[in-house]
Image 1 (cartoon, rainbow, N blue to C red):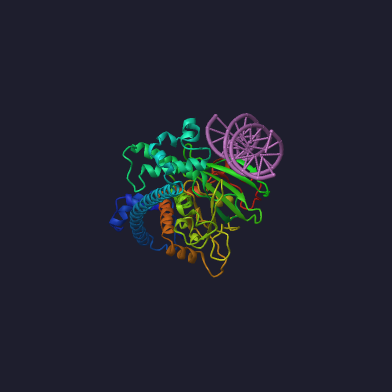
Image 2 (tube, rainbow, N blue to C red):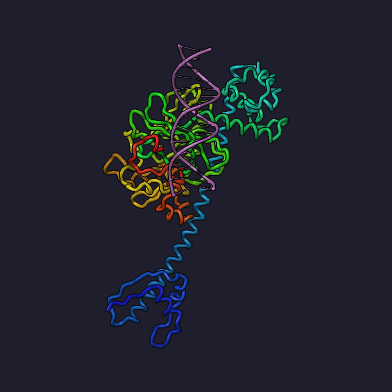
Length: 451
DNA sequence: CGTTTTTGACCAGCGC
DNA sequence: GCGCTGGTCAAAAACG
């Protein structure tokens, strides 16, 4: 006879007043009531001493419950630590961006100052703050005062110049400007500068989009000249009137390469998974806008900390700066085969719901069960001997930013167990709730329907 | 029914 | 001024 003990049975046993024939429930066993009536069947082969075996099982179950409780407490502590680390990281990142921005604007001012000499000194000294209004808000008199103001470049120069002036270059806020005015100028400088420059990421992917933790709404699609693959236009839908936009397009020469171009800065809080990428794009934009843009022309950046948080491959990927009169672009190329470049996982996921299972936080579960931020695409490496663990370990060791991002990823996962469940469920309306992209099968050709 | 995608039309910038 | 191109808009369609 094969006896079966379930948790339900255990609870019934424990709830009964024990008699002399049975061992009294230990303290650990008394805790077992919290488990509930989940049916956890345990097969017992020994039927001769069911009570004794039942008692041993109860003890084991109690010990397991204690361990479970301890693990829960440890998880809570770790979660709190990770949240703290994440907050510190975000705060430091924001501060870095602010400092870089101020440095850029100061450089811009000095450059203008050197070039234009004292001619603008008098002008700068009397520039009204209304000059910093957006193009649509400015008055004809402003155009006269600022000698043109016809192009966005001029707007940027003027904003930069006046922001530097507001900070009096050395950082002292001009006493004649109120803090509100200064803040407004800074906001406008950020808006204008970040609206112009772009960060482009080239990565190999069989999928039509690169999950990045943000929510995107598609607002257009065009077939660009010279590339039969259509270009899709998305805008961030996480915040109201968020200026961030992105373009997604296949490379004409190699359709396995997905080119994602980001433009702008988010004006709303970002989910943890989106922060590293957003910070990196902002940093790239700020780097471009810094006074060193000339020296970056056609140069290659490697191991740049600015890009380190883009992905673990950033330490080896090529980041190039492509200046352009209308829209300078910083390109991060993750497709080069010369290093341990990380590529989007191919073929291993047959169900598209596994490819876009990221409803809230943008984390991807790899085939090995490991969760990674979707901005750290599931990795495969050209070197056969190099395992995923090796790559990740090396990347973590090299890159503190990646470390922080992984902390964020793990923190989010622990913090919201529902995410795990959500991963296995199809999203509403067949769209990827993380990226708001259609949840298409992995190998669907890149057509106008697929993006 | 609400949300998102699709897609043709429209607009602005640029080169000739 | 004209045409081309990239980017955006907005009404209709699709989706669950």
